[in-house]
Length: 328
Ligand code: NDP
Image (cartoon, rainbow, N blue to C red; front, side, top):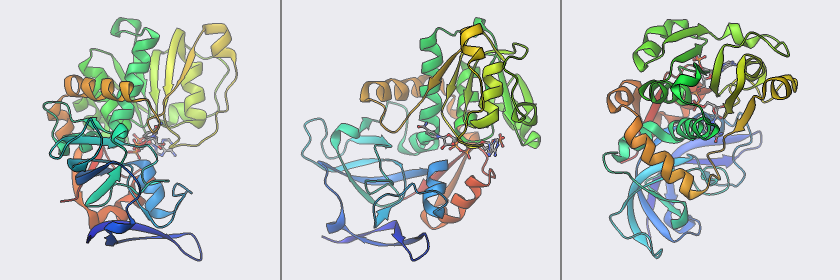
């Protein structure tokens, strides 16, 4: 057994340290599939893990990184054989299970999804957990019964990873997308992704009224806090908001009024423990409903040695779209 390159997180006297180093293959955790990781990506949670800004990592040493795409090297799982192209999101990777910023990963075969036809390993990580979460949110709104004719859909944190993919997918599906951003300088970028309107997030960040003028049939919120409260209070009768993030805060200073007077629904989205059938559906819908040209436009590539710096930038809200990390 040898060693491989990885971003290792260790506990320090104060907080944690993150460094690109050699990791011993013998230290890989249990799993029935070993994957040669080709691409990973930078998500908000990765930023928290590599900077140590929140206690995302719950085992030491840890390899950071919550998602990967690559090729199966070895497998004792009946579904997988050497050479299969796979994608893996969440399941505690980078938190309780050794993660994806590494040339090798050992995981449970039950965690893996086959790369859909037409999606390369790089594309899959350009989408990443952020994009797959955006699609889970779209699926939740559809399950609620929303269609383009229902009315506009608001997307918050629109210039970020979840928001950019959500904007691109919803506009391809024919929705009137209202993109909310704190970076009005990115208005042209958001219109390029298909946003019909771009609004300043300041409109949605103050204290929310119990009910406000009805503005949208639904929404995808990656911000939380007062923003989510405002989204709920401005949702049309019978509409729904898919809540998937907390970039603006973990609290939810709202009232029950939108629920009991307008029948509004709050749909919770979790990508980490999401069951396999839903994952497969999300990935197959990403293959058909995300314009690959737009995906290329929102994607920026970095190397493993740049991940720690980029992690600080994503937390500061300075990353536009998606960052893909080249591993091999
Ligand atoms: P990004 O940093 O790429 O995007 C977040 C965006 O939110 C920023 O680009 C910015 O958009 C906006 N934002 C940042 N800070 C604030 C603030 N203080 N107030 C209001 N808006 C803010 O992150 P991701 O897209 O990768 O993730 C977004 C959120 O979704 C995170 O909270 C993440 O943890 C969560 N998430 C949850 C998942 C789940 O399973 N539920 C899976 C993946 C992500 P703009 O500049 O346009 O305003």
